Length: 192
Figure 1 (tube, rainbow, N blue to C red):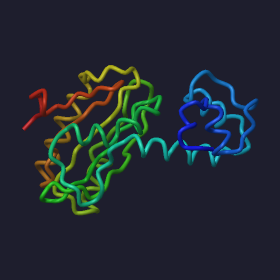
Figure 2 (figure 1 turned 90 degrees about the vertical axis):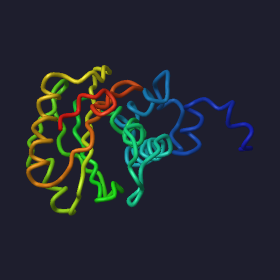
Figure 3 (figure 1 turned 120 degrees about the horizontal axis):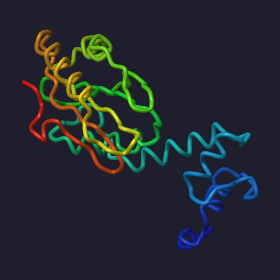
């Protein structure tokens, strides 16, 4: 295949060339539907998962350990594709050192369709274990609307209070929706 010809290949053709799955096995109108069907019905599920993960990582601008956190858009770009795949609320914490450089991120909970079940001890446990000085919390709204719920505002206040008590600053809380996000800091509703 010549590189210039890749623009004329269908989604099925591209996946066929990478995964060697017969085109007749690929049902769906778009890449997302094709991948979802292959994950359910293909004998090459593991290979399909790997291709999907590569695509996610390529599309995101992930922070790497040691990279400086400076604004909410960095966290959004770091998580937007990964969190878009979840059909239930997913809560993640990003751990930062005393200069706000990334240490790691960790999933805290996988909730329900419209609720993330979060407890302070689960949020701060990895931060304490990894000696983080600050955290950024983030979760998705599968509805696509990033506007925080009353529960989101309440849990943010509780996490900030606990963080202040144990000496780990909660820098921001991002709610990620469909190609947009809500930052508590940017919207001036982050508790002190």
